[in-house]
Length: 558
RNA sequence: CGGGGUGUAGCGCAGUUGGCAGCGCACCGCGUUUGGGACGCGGGGGUCGGCGGUUCGAGUCCGCCCACCCCGACCA
Image (cartoon, rainbow, N blue to C red; front, top):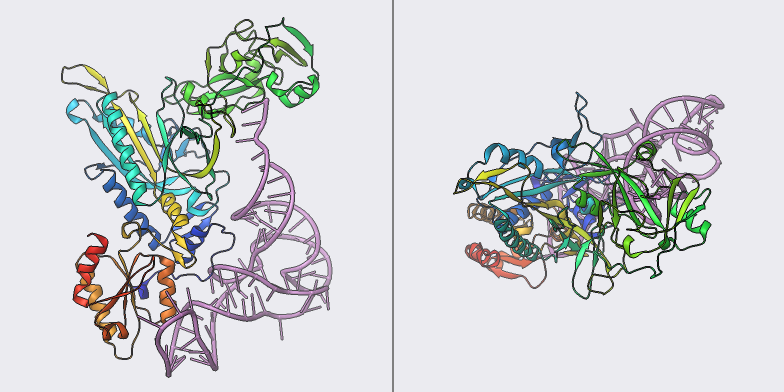
């Protein structure tokens, strides 16, 4: 591309209100443009960089033979894997933007996969993606708009799934290595069967707005909402008899604990949620109980129950199962789906609601006074909580850049094996947010002069060629010829053929950050060729014109 | 959802007691210049976020709304 024909120019000053250094540079150099909060357009440089990053990712992830598909940008709610969104079609049906695509792929698999001969198969797509966020910030680092490279690995059974999962995990590590980004997998939560099905890849970055919990002792890492942690008995008192007490105006844990003058850890917190399920299953009310000083992890509860989304229950829905909002407890509720945190059975003599306005019960004990349909880990860990290994969990800031999800038996999808038996199809799905990955790299790989991509394959061009204008016209014609030759040899070149002064051109080259630079000038030609220099630093070397392709081959490895 | 801040040319910003809409960069033309953001002369570009109000007169004062940025809290 010739800079004289470029659609955008560089900005001397970044748009106001952009704090992150890398993002400021992306905007100044003309990679991206902010259109609205968290909604960015990719300009030609940014689109190219993302395209090349995606090519690199496909290569390293082994997607060369993948069969391309394209899922529609909007999906009916029951295929998105997400909860309801405000988008509706003209007939009033709920539609969803975004989502993993896994359920939509299941539709394709159900219709087309019959035989073991069709497996394994890999489908892939790269498409604009939407991920809403209450408070997007940091440009592409946490944008709502983006582009997702997704691959769907269809496999004949659970062991093949585990093998593929291992392979893909290793390849992801390689990819992030090549991006010089130290991303690692973190646990994203366990599902109804107690298995970790999803893994998020996390790039630690001080500027990141996502948080994980990390154990410095054993290396355990997990999403904030998914982290497992040790529970300890809050007291080892013997169970005392139930005791109903009047607790007027105490509908929250806070007010209750203050009224009774007890720590919140001696209370049971009742949380009513309505679970929405995929596949047309009727929503159900879930009554979750955690210790009063804890918060419920919706991530854990979702995975435990198989719900795709949870919403707070209305007072009417709570009353329908015989509970009283603010004074609810699991005692005496016959039909409710009660789930209690594993800490509750370890905590004797809690204060819980009496299911009567203005009253609570003291000395409520799990097992003696009530039981739940399930006792499980449903409370959210906080920094400082103890890791299962015993050390303290630390919170780490960063960004989620990729997601892997395992489906050992994709809903309703089966094939006939060699013996004629029906077997479930397994799916491993990968999602990689391309622009977010680019933004992470921009935050890490920059200096006071601009962006500094770690390699040509992650930069928008292989080479940045700067022509310094002359009176003789010789550099001009040599540069044009070299531009043609390099292009014919398969190198992509950003050719600065503008008439601007050298300072402008060098500064723009530093800002854009292509790692390999060629300068064509009268001086260099006098010295026997063109100058070859790396953005990262070091001296310029003069290379004879005819040796430039060979020098590039050595530098770029292609 | 709460608190704070900002909306003026493509970008960054000034605009005094209410009295002709400005500066730097960028852009266009001509000329000079060319190894680290050159210079001269000339030029173009505005619904001052929107709507309403006060006033002879509003970028400026008042009201409502919108957008964006920052901080805080999501919640039982």
